[in-house]
Length: 598
Image (tube, rainbow, N blue to C red; front, side):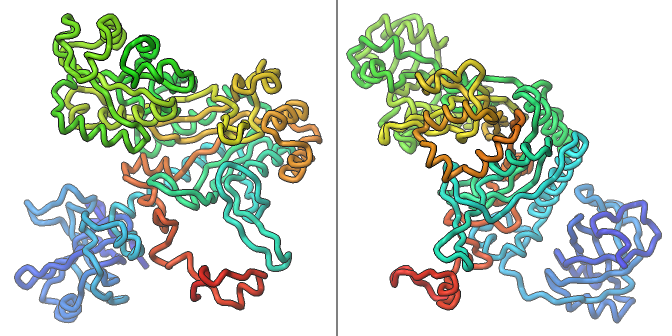
């Protein structure tokens, strides 16, 4: 029997005989004495094998990295000057009395303490990658967070209820993963993008506080914070308004950070409208650590001769903004050129700028190719409105509103976190949470000339906005809310529609007729007829939360067996072909060029 975990041996065990299990992290032969760093999920301990115990010593000589061992020995203090303060067990060592090789290991494809491994190597050999201390720590952190979430929600009266993994395909904003039905030829299940419809039906069923930590599936293009299968902390509750819902889950996040990270988040979290967030930062998930902000200058540019500015300034679908960078005049031209290339990723055609050498001397004190095309009154107004000081640099964005928001918003983050930003205090350390509220209920698509639900079609409009559903859907704001932390959307939710007349108006605004609504959502609409209570909810991305808390670069670093950006598992080689017999059972036939061997 194991006495304790290897990494937990400490001075309290001095003089005791302990039995440990683990893997060889490193073996060192120091002039006849063999030292073994034994590792398990709790950490490392130093094992000392003396030559006096010939049988044990002979076994130790055969040991190599990643052998699985059982070790029995006496705990003693390390000799003076050899303690390792970086290890919990660093003050002690175990003098080996018994040593058993439980299983040998072939030579690993990489050293587990190598910090320069490619992600392809790591994901291909994920089992070994998961043995690395940083990955062990990440998954243990994930476990502790999930446990604290469960404890908190249990204390608040929430019930953990599972919902189906095989369900009906419904439009929720991304492609569904489809599963063919063998017993119902030609028909398909869908893997759930979220438990949204089921948790609403649970509210009608009377389970007024529901949650589950569950898998969700979306067949969409991937990036650092997305996976085809991801984990949500999914919650719904009845008889509560949006303010009460936000309060419960703000406290949940505060509890998790305090308990797990020993970090005290502010109380209460700041609240900002979607309109203000877009105006000031060009993003509905602004990183509040970065001190840079947009300044709208379209009204100052409508009459200038510089068409790059005056054109968008006179177009209601466009935006012209300035981004003042304190001390930005220090930037070399090469850095400005790099930023110009960077904003091109987001569709910007260029990046105009002005260096402010002497703000009191217009235009001679301003350095930029565009100065000669802007009248002096407009230049003075820009300097005044942005609060420009000598030595500053002002970047400009002028284009379609979405392009400006995306490009200059990304530039704001990049500059804030750059060496220049850190040097001049343009970014703060720590955690900056924020609630973003009052989202638009609909998004208008110019190609299809119709509105689409910005969240989902069961989101409730704000009180007093119901009439806009028929007269001007663009004005409708939703009872929706997102929790943002350091520029990442941690969670989002809304109050749901529980009245049939309001739901009918929303469907009409979305150009969904009664027949289509019945076909897609009939089971939910039927349930809502039976005294549906007022209800709302929220879902948190557990993977994103852990990524932030762990300081990881990607959610793939906090998921045990993730997919690549091509939605492939390099460990199991999934997805893969299947044999013809399986396809026939599912009544599926592939085109010749699509068929792959099983």
